Length: 431
Image 1 (tube, one colour):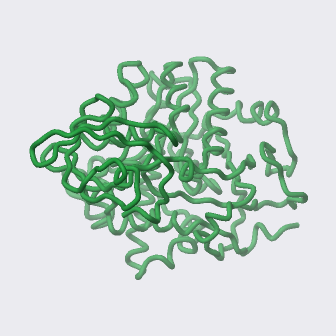
Image 2 (cartoon, rainbow, N blue to C red):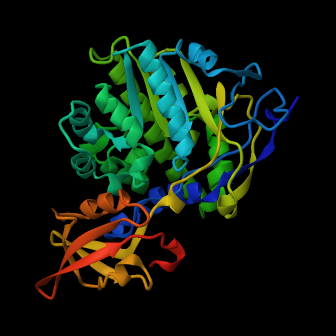
């Protein structure tokens, strides 16, 4: 027997802690400061967790694509896994946000369920907030282009991870008219809870609060072990924990409201969230069952190993004893992000009075070689008008090494043209 049900040391990505703690306690991200380093992968990095806890020894190192049913310790085929997964109303996938292979697992599950139950599958996504539901509905009805969609949901403000991680999932939903449900609360409600806690929300927003159930003791202890050392006081941990509860209770409410609605009646839902929202079942799954007793499965894409370039982001964590399985299925995948695959301009931008302005240009960058200067204002990119930063971010994100772009910039009130050729520009050299 492994000591998976007792106290153990696990490895987590400290940048996930930084992202979560920073966004909840500090309440600020790069874009909130009005500037963004221009790259095709605009965002932060999510958690990675390699290793499997459970009653059965892992044995040999798993291979990419292997699927293990943790309650039995048995390796199952894709068809076998989907046969079991198909019996559940709710399929909770806990992703590593910056791993393209985790997102491929999500798409496989969605496609396989849709093949078995055409017209009876929905997707719930942590990446969107409930005020954005109307935009998601317009997307799945085919009314918006990709760029129009990203602008309408303010992708780079609200989520920030490279859209390419989620493009295939959202394209499949659009192509097949699959409902996509926004799971997260509004940014305004989240900020109020972060500042004053759940008991001090303004009357205006109190009606927006979901029903908050009792805190799960295993969840509290686990989160304290992972995040507590990053917070300077017990009070800050409580604030952080309450925001986590707001997230998950809102997610659960959104899932249940949809499944109980005429639109969602008789459907299955696949939820796409970060791993800690579903791992061990004490997050989103338990909060759904408290509202609506339905069958669920947890699928955890598990990284076989952490790449060398991400090793310095790992930290050791002593997790408390947990008499719980982390998931029903561990789906083993390589770990591959998009950071090293993206080209960059090497500029820092800001929006001022409806204009996209270059704040700074990194030495030796593609922008510098093209003659872009601080103070330049973007007029057009490849012949398309630039109205906001998303226009530039999106188009840079679709460029590859060796691609070029034509820019029109306003400099001291006079328009000037620039031709830029993209190459991989190391992030450490940018500013």
